[in-house]
Image (cartoon, rainbow, N blue to C red; front, side, top):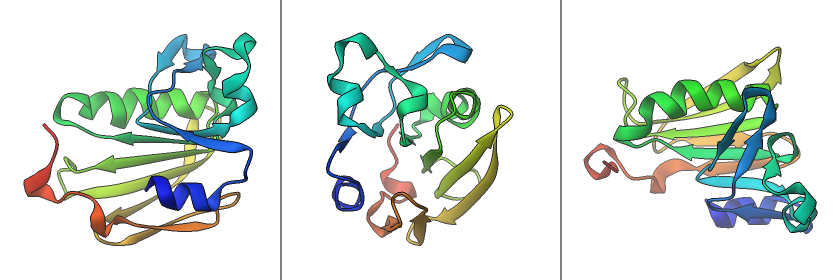
Length: 145
């Protein structure tokens, strides 16, 4: 996924793992699995931790222990930041492993969501305008614990 994101973003943006994202509205610091954010925000010491409203995309990979946090608390927090795009990779979904893209945050919630099963493709809208192939995501028998 990193390579697909790197091909789709402007040169002055970066893809980061374990970068702290501050959500002042909810008074929380989250550490998403991936964050796409302009490099100048990351490099500016006066903006540390990085403000959530500067992130362009956050990605969370659900584990057994993070199910409720990723599906509910972080969904709510990122919508309030607001982060324009939240991608939830959920091998633990009760309906089967899925990927959900939440978009169009407003009034503390995401107003649009698209869910696909593992193996399908999901499109990231502008400014990415990229299609992610989820066929390489681990299946149900390879889920993280």
